[in-house]
Image (tube, rainbow, N blue to C red; front, side, top):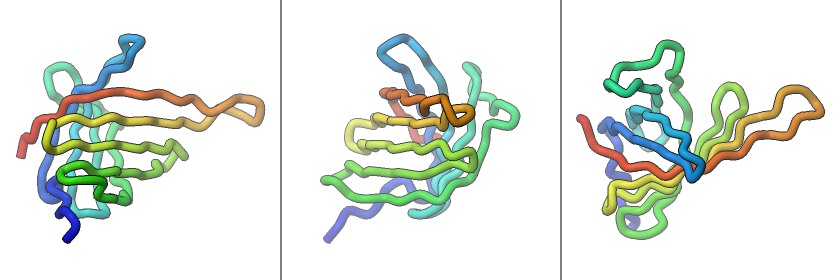
Length: 118
C-alpha cells in the first residue's frame, strides 16, 4: 500500500539555502494532494506581498515518508521538490524561464529544512 502524503491539511515553514549562499523562506500550505499554496515570507515570518500562488501539484511516493512533488507556476517556472518527512528536509530544483528568445532559462538548486506550523 503506497504511503499517504502527510502534508495534506498542513502548513510548513521552509528555510532554503543554496551552495552559493542564496537564501529564501516560504510557507507551503497543502490543501490537498493536488493543491498547494506557497507564500514567500520575510525573516520575521511575515508574508511578502505578491509572493503567493496556488498551484496544481503532482505527488509521487518514492519510499516511506519521501515524496517527489512537482508543479508549474503561472509564469512558466517549474519546481521539483524532493520532500523528506522523516528528516524534515526538502531539496528543490527550480527552472525559471529566460527573458526573450535569446536568453536561456535560469536553473537553481536549494536545500531546505521544514517545520510544520499547522
